[in-house]
Length: 86
Image 1 (cartoon, rainbow, N blue to C red):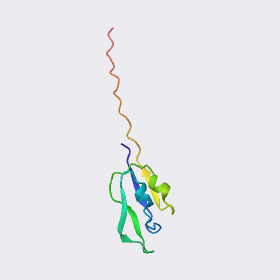
Image 2: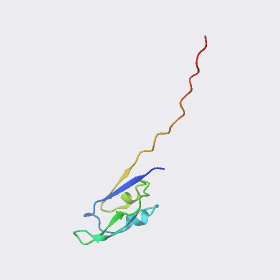
Image 3: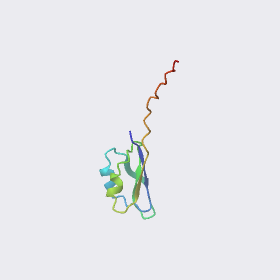
């Protein structure tokens, strides 16, 4: 499964909740704290982000950055070399 993480620029976020509504994993919520402008800001509350970027795409202030973790490389079986007989 692909995983991701969200970084919110808390001083830019105005708490419009568009990112929360657009998150299919319900990974975001408004914080209990407020920023310097007096807004409650979005924060990652669950570690189940898939990196879909819906939140960043709908953010009107570009306050969200999404980082996706690369998929783990598939491990394939190594071919078995047969001993050669003379």
